[in-house]
Figure 1 (cartoon, rainbow, N blue to C red):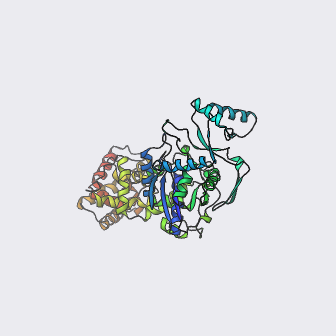
Figure 2 (figure 1 turned 45 degrees about the vertical axis):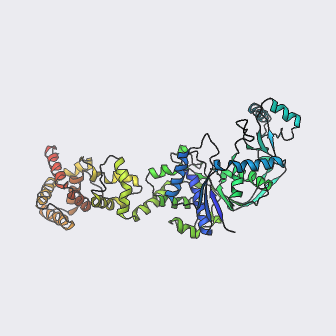
Figure 3 (figure 1 turned 135 degrees about the horizontal axis):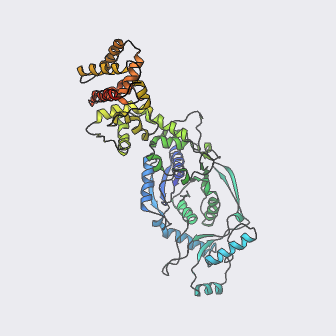
Length: 489
Ligand code: GLU
């Protein structure tokens, strides 16, 4: 049997981390089995669906490397198919019009609440007589369509993740609405609802395995009844655990990040995000292996190794994975990803005109990056136009002999316009010898003099970068001028 799976997002928001993780597992499963991965946009909710969300979902999946083989299909293009199925269910007496008003339903709920019963539709319009129907129609009521759910049924399936799941028909809330009331008199049926549309699509698209979040378990029970009613083969179902925040709650807007865009903005690489999502609920056969590309994980993937328990979102792990990918990336690629972060921080960088220098800067700071967004802070000392001195730098200047050391370096610099690494090392050596001090003192002083800080990226490389912009002399002179004015201890 050729495997066909799908991701079926609703375009009512940007690509959500939960949807993206479900997409990852579907993609891995499809690729592992040599099957097809289909994108279906569930846009029947007209009020909340937006084309820009569809675009965001598509670009987010593409960014992560989750290419789809078929689609995107849009449910709004397929309404006739759903209406046909609804009509078939009506004709066969498996569905019926329900004329209850919102007020009547609300009153029913209140009564159930007062009697400490779970809220449900009590199936009161299941067996309306022709006369009752005519009466409601005459009142101008527009019916919804409900699908009959047998309270005595137990729905059982072998879940690919959770093992056997069984659900009582009586716990499904009564006969379920499969189509809203018609909006205009030209329509004989209103907007089809989620469970019906999903089943019609999954049948029509030949979906063999439905892999989705466990928040859909009750829907699965309802959908199995619809498959039966429509006489279709029931696919396999696998329900993946929810993504939880650090306190064990479902990850939500309150956690600050929910969409893939949020993570992108925070400076995570797509490879790292995909890798992290692979691990978020799945364990490789070799449980110590944590770094994989999507194709590598696809080789190893099996749905049985998806965990049942909720997956806790672990920022430290995501950061670690991101840094692994960042550190491996060649500077000529990484530099292009850093430019937007520098620009956003207000640094004027000209990638076209200044590429070699920016690549060297990238290579210098890359080992200290965890996220792309760390770049402005990590390169501040080299990109900033002004030089400010930290208290530690000032303390360094006040050590004995430091001013002289800086004067000597400055003097040595006059002889060299373009420094090589060897020149820089020679100057440090010479000045250390002259001052008869430890090399460390010279290095710390030079760093404070050039950068205004006593810590930062590799000093020689930083110095060379400043030198290439003729900034080393300027900065050292500026520091010496500053020190002249600094009251001595
Ligand atoms: N549109 C549903 C959602 O976004 C799809 C659920 C499913 O995969 O059936 O949650």
